[in-house]
Image (cartoon, rainbow, N blue to C red; front, top):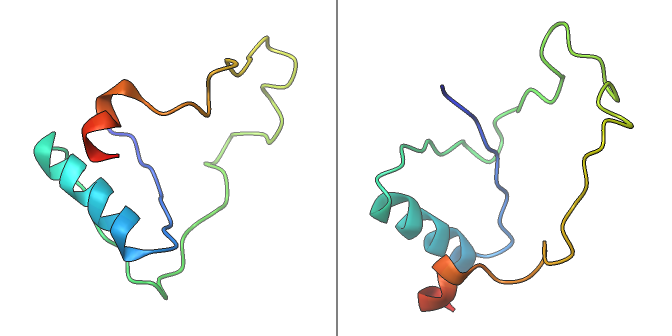
Amino acid sequence: MQKNLILEFNNDEDYQLIVNLLQRLKVKYQEAKPDAKQDTKPPKGVKLGSLAGKGFSIPDDFNEPLDDLKDYM
C-alpha cells in the first residue's frame, strides 16, 4: 500500500536531516518544486469530519522526541 506525506520545512538543516533519514531507511521520496500546486482537496467520496466522535485520541507524549532520532539531535 502506498501512502503519501507532505512535509514543509522552515530551514535547510531540518530538511537535510529528514532526507538523510529517508535515504538511510531506503524510503522512496519525491521532492516537489516550491511553486508546485499541491492538491489539498480530500479524495473523492471522503466527507470532511466523517471520523469525528470515533474515539481517536492523541497520546500525552505525542510531542516528545522519538528514541529513533536521538542520534540526530
